[in-house]
Image 1 (tube, one colour):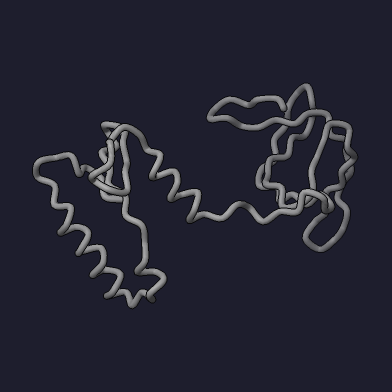
Image 2: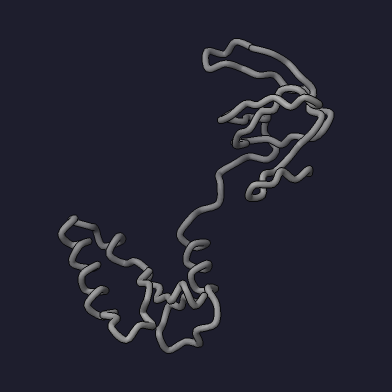
Length: 141
């Protein structure tokens, strides 16, 4: 993404050439040299894949991100596997586990086991609450 292309002093073509030269100097392969370019004025709230397009949204940027980043590879029908990245305590609900689900699903009332890396079952519990963090706010699901 090349930002600040709306400024009178912008050097869009030169910057594009410099980026391409950088990739070549890093010995990028043909697939890596076939990258999308987005032109943006972030302060003004727009990003487009062609300077000829109307400059009124960031839809083109979001489309590139969705195309370039694959969805998570998870099996929703498999056994629950969740990598715990943080634990905390809640005075009303007890131990809270924060992490990323790699497979399976979880619901209130499910019985779960905490398994260490060596395969030992550390503890067992019942799910009483599920939350999702939205910015600085925890939202019940």
